[in-house]
Length: 343
Figure 1 (cartoon, one colour):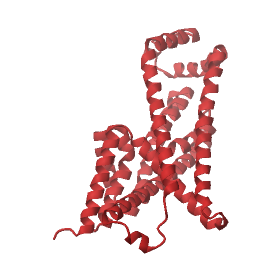
Figure 2 (cartoon, one colour):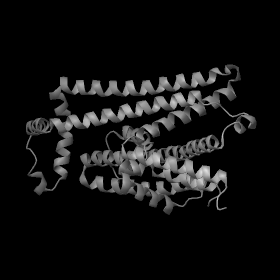
Figure 3 (cartoon, one colour):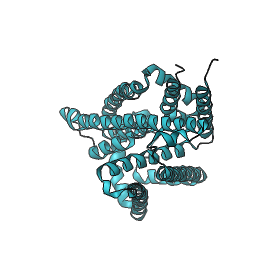
Figure 4 (cartoon, one colour):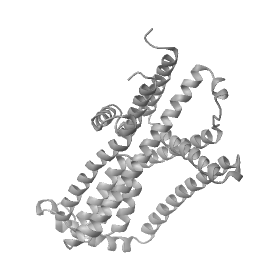
């Protein structure tokens, strides 16, 4: 016989999970799964920490874990939404002051552009304001669709987080073999797949945290040490370092956002400054691949070429979300095959 019963059940569950992942990527629900895995993992980890260090809490440790995570998540969502709302209200209430603050930045950008491009730009701040107003009127429905799509993604993330918290709260630790043996073979294979998925997610999450911290440190060195040596001081440097760490926690997409922010800020100083900035960022991100392969790859014995091929393949088939989920997907498949002794 080619496979034993446990291997057959394991393969069946792995294929089922793979099909589920593909469906979720196709219907754009993968952000919800990632958010659910995050809250589920955090609930279990926080529960373990509280139960080990505060044994007097007993069974209340899980309830405290869920309550604490809900409080943090709601504080981030409400605080971020309120900050954006107050910022937009401030801009709307004081348009003259806002445009006056933007004018020096626009002047620097205009001076950095070649004359052939500069001739297409408005001559004064009023011209820019008129162009922006016309653009908003002409693309109002497109902007509404972008806002609606962003709100849809936010709802998916929140629902995924809620499901993860519920599953984390209901998760029961298997403290003895008797309980495990009472389960059917299919249930055991299914639980083994879930455990592998959580383990793989932890590998990727730890890797991403290390990468984000590395990014922030290297960015701080570049902004506060290297550039000042050459007499260059970028505005919003502290905010850029913080943004580098926060957005760096988001795989792939976070790097793109940070790169754009850094390039735009550097471009407001001069075009000559923006070029070394983007080159430096590219070099840093190349080092990230080595870190990612070192952390995730060492856990599942996967090389950097394997992960890059998986990312390229998933990005081709599923777009940006496939690129983000590819390390988890590939690591889950490979770890499952190794546990089932198929490779």
